[in-house]
Structures are given as C-alpha cells and as structure tokens.
Amino acid sequence: MKRRAFLKNTTLTVPLIASCSLMSCAGSNIKSEINDKMKSPKISLAQWSLHRQFNDGSLDPIDFAHLARANFGIDAVEYVNQFYVQSVNDESFWLDMKKRAENDSVKSLLIMVDDEGDLGDSGDAARNTAVENHYKWVNAAKLLGCHSIRVNAFGASDNKVYRAAIIDGMGKLSAYAAKENLNIIIENHGLHSSNARLIVDIIKEVNMPNFGTFPDFGNWCLNEKWGSTQANRCTDSYDIYKGVNEFLPYAKAVSAKSYDFKDNGDETSLDYYKLLKLVKDSGYDGYIGVEYEGERLSESEGIIATKALIKKVWATL
Image (cartoon, rainbow, N blue to C red; front, top):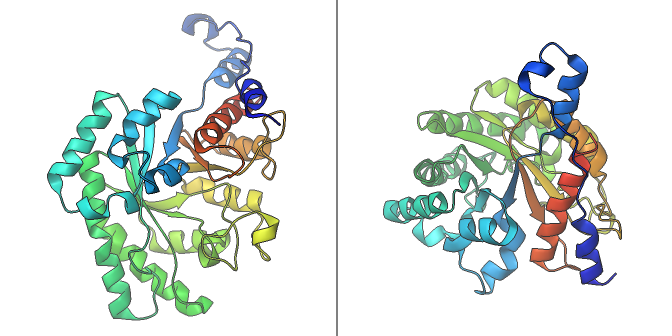
C-alpha cells in the first residue's frame, strides 16, 4: 500500500457526539457512560520510536520533547537512557531538558533504563552493583519531573534463584527510589520478565507502593531477551492478552507497541481492540505510550499510524 494512501486512511476522523452538561448528566448512569466513552486517551511518545534517527544523528536527543509536540501533537514523552549516557550525572543538563519540555508544554513521564546490570543476578556483588548503577537514573528522572524509571527484570536463569535475587534487587532499588518519590516499573522485555504471573508474584512479595509494572503490547517472548511477539522471532511466548491483563492492576505506564499496519490502519499482529479494552476496563487512567518498532513505514509514519489507531479504537470502547 502506498504511504500517502495509508496515512490518509489512518487520519480519518471519528464523528463527534454532543456531550451533555454536568448538571444534566447528574444521576444518569447511561449519560455518564456515553460521556466516559467520549474521553480521549492520554497519549505519550516513547523515544525508541525514533531511535534510528537519533542513532544516525539526523535528530538530536535534546530536542525530543519539542519533536513530540511539533511533529506529532503529543504532549507527554518517555525517554530512553542510552541517548543520554554521557550526561547522566550532569544536573544542569537535566534541568535544561526539563525547561525545554516545559517550554513546549510537554510532560516528562519516565526514563527507560537499559544496560546497567541485571537486578536479578545470582551474585550478591553483581546484583548490588546493578542496583547502584540505577541510582543515577532515578536522580535524573527526579530532576526531569518524571514519575518513574523503567527497569529490566533480568537475572539468573534458574527460576528459584532468580525469584529470590530479583526480589532482593527490586526491593533495594524501590526503597532508594521511594526516597525521591519515584516509581520503579518492570516492562515485559523477554525471558523471566515476560512471565507475567511470576512478575506479579514478585511485585506482591516486594510489596512496595512505588514498585509496579509497565505492560508492553509486544515483548512477550520467554526464550529471547528483548523478545518480540512476531512468530518468526520467537518460539515460546507468554499469551499477550493474558500477560497485559495480569500486569494492568499494577501498571503505572502502558506501552502500545506496533510493528506494521493493514490497509484499514489496524495493527497486523496485535488486536488493539482487545488490548485497549483490557486497558480501559482495568480502570487505568495514565498515559498510553506510542512505541513503533516497524520497518516498512518510516518512524514518523509509524508514530502517526499508531497514534491514529489508538484514537480510532478508543472511540469504539
């Protein structure tokens, strides 16, 4: 399908239903439900959606918040730590980043943190080092005005060893983050972290209010790190919809992963109608992050298509 025709299809508008006033809706369950369905989803942009352009230098990571607002009409962002490694301990840098976002009326929601060690490592020294490696990102997120950092729940391969180790690592990191009023959130990112039942049990055992989940519509592969839901890249996957549903009661952010789209704008491998219904029915009222990882469309086109799909589906719920 040609890109021009595709983008035209994904930007079709949904007819508006006239809303009633607060007074006329009072006491009417039916009218309240109609009014609730009209509410637009809160949409954020995951920086990874533009990672190729940040990596090749065609875009500058310090402009991320501005790009989200100016190019895509999105007013909340999720940063990726790998684009800011050299500046992580520079307080003035993060204050400047905060100012840049505020100048564009963009909210900084979280930082996705990778490559700082395994928080579920079986070795005490390695695990404690990984915990301490994350402190600087908690500090950076605090300066930015974020509510969370996203971490990876990787570690020992043995299930029993892993469970004990990850409880220890996550508990220590969550305790540190609590002092800064920051959340620590686990995203399903492959291996043990995509075993939703296991992760939920760990969250319950750690039992800290600032420790929760970051359900991603993709990444449910159990035998691959950074695993994909796409069949040609994973041989053992946790059920997508079961996993998202199990994560949602503990969710402090949600990632709407996308790979490719049909002619009508629907995602080719993920049932957004089912996924977003789970999100809405759970009572989750935070932001839903656009995270395009496809290759057929450009990154910008993929972001536009994903945002349009979220809005289209949400209007039907």
